[in-house]
Image (cartoon, rainbow, N blue to C red; front, side, top):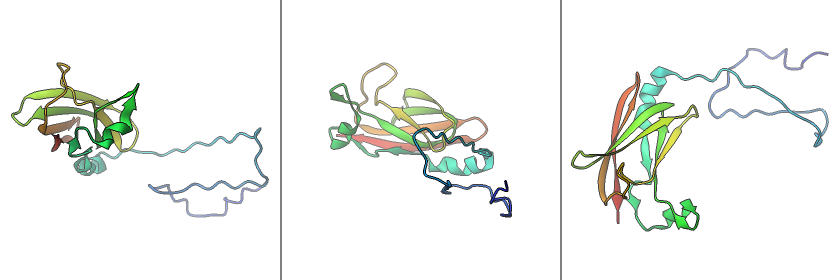
Length: 154
């Protein structure tokens, strides 16, 4: 039988924010299975070079002892953390004190758009970091580096 979409032209590739709508000729039942595949997702190096400027830290400033910490409660105690947002699929995040001392490095690898990596506010030695201004450098192969800063306050 003829596909009703065959007569539609031209084919327009999907773009961010598109909504897919599925229509059926009858109401689905719990025994029905739907299977679909979406092809064509791509990663553009040129676009990524522009979007690297969209990397930021949340929350900024991080305020110790606020209600924000309760969002990340785990096993009865809150987990302090900040998130690096809008990371490219593969990146190394280096975090430094205001005096330039390396605090820690985070290896990020995720193919999900708008990548996110968390930092638990501890140094490589283990103790939690002090209050102050911190600098970060996000390095990516072929895209260069992006530098930023954030604050941890009491």
